[in-house]
Image (tube, rainbow, N blue to C red; front, side):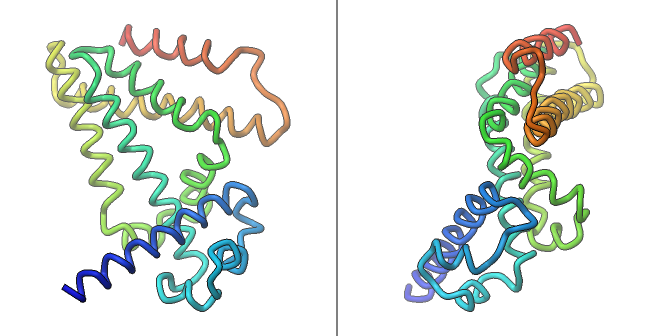
Length: 202
């Protein structure tokens, strides 16, 4: 029992560190990110963080992984609530954009790290958790699609991935333009609507 409580406490403290790291990364960005600032915000010493993470990169990977898992669970829930048929693709894309559009700094944490550094160490750090939850997302969307259409399993899964990639592309463009201090001539909601129309006609 005592061992279980200790494990629960360690898990709770670890998650608190990850959450503060995500907030710090969102505010300061990857180049300026420092463990000293995370420790200051938590009211602990920097060496205390090393009880949970080997180094700064390990903490960044954990923060990124948490964001990827969170976004996947949001999309899974949206897909589960969708009616059978092609509407699930439009709902999936909108859920992705809605999740990140107002907090693009977190989007950059979740997706920029792997673009810059690759997946080195991520698979080991996640224990396959990200792949597992993304497969669950694809399975959920496939099930909704095939329940309302005559699509093959392969095409349904391909459409699920295409819808996700389309939303990823739109949010990537929003992120890029925000960093450039500009934006689209069209509102995000109007572009999401057009994307949804395209996906409904898939």
